[in-house]
Length: 108
Image (cartoon, rainbow, N blue to C red; front, side, top):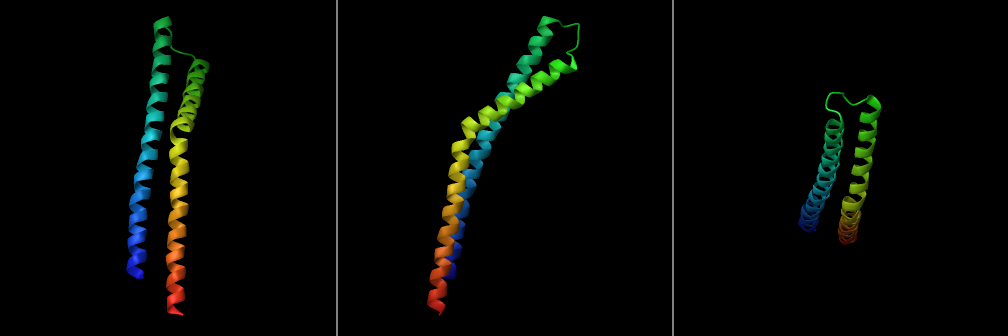
């Protein structure tokens, strides 16, 4: 029974790691898109007037837009993976608890 539980935990860990990697990949994609958007905004400011540095208000506006873009991309890209990951963690816990419950019944 211990081997069965250990094997189940290892299999679940492998699946969870895959889902975590997929989620992280989506976070990285969202981050890269947001950074590219920020770079584009700063280049646009330079193009308008390359002799004047951006004001702190302009920088803050770009940063706020960048953060909002990241949040939007994250919600769009990562949310399904995040939900799946949570579901897999829950399933893993249920499977482990079931094996433990069966083991305890056999021990009695």
